[in-house]
Image (cartoon, rainbow over all chains, first blue to last red; front, side, top):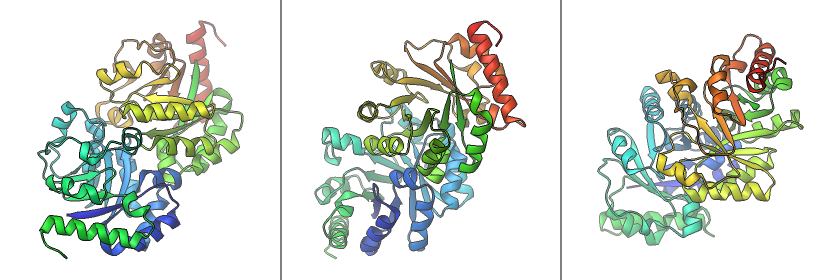
Length: 212
Length: 212
């Protein structure tokens, strides 16, 4: 029942400031793809340096060149990195291998994965599978978590991402995810710390059935 | 019948030195995904600054957040950028829109695209479609251009990428591509300039039937 804070479309300094505000209420910090493509792996190393005890996920969205991309992410301090589920299986398997060799973890992003490919991915049981409503889908269709497929994937480790807000939490909880990924509901709030605290409290209450 | 020089798995300085050696024999310079993810968009701006008259392609491999990613690539000086054909259509359409607004171009990377998705992509007639044997596929299966699907895609603008060497040129020519993407056959040669010259001469000879 972890909360992953996704940092996107901002500078490295803004990302660090945002994460400091939210730090005590989130379990993982995600260096978003936009930071990595805009600033390179320095975005990962700078953020890890500020939060050495917090697991950091690098949203590499690897689609090829798996060993190289995962190595530079892990060398920069990432504890977990993402590969696209739509990529060739050899790429995903290489990511899993590099992660295992480094004692790190893999998240497989299921964005736009066909049901045929999904079946093949199910054998990678060590990975976290991320059901993902993309930014572009959210912005164009107003597609949200609530409109996602309600079927539960037969995976041990599930993450949910894409426009998660306080209102999405009951629906998200039904899928029993290991991780929920929260971005703008916290990062764009007028009061980041307060938004993170509300998210943390609401999520914990829903998952445990108790107030915290 | 253009040659695109792909620069990957090296520093920005090495990329610039490599491109200088090959410059007169190539038509486009590609800033590889590995450079973008390792060093950020500075890799694009630094390379464009050195080669202001040469078209520069940013291999962004966009899968989401299309407007942001394509904007930072074009702002950094790229003339063309890539989006994954496996991405949601709204993402690809946003890339085409941002490119058009900026007077720039889009290459759709067909790596691991299903035949169903391929049919949908065919309506994007302004894009260059890149048939792509990935690095990971090449390294694991020794898959090469010669082993690719020999069917010709019904597209106006075709690019071919993935392990293209001198020996692949006759097979590549049969598909009548607008662009061939050449990486390590030039960048890892002992004599980069000589390798680029050989590639240029061989490709021109094959395509025109004349020695140059």
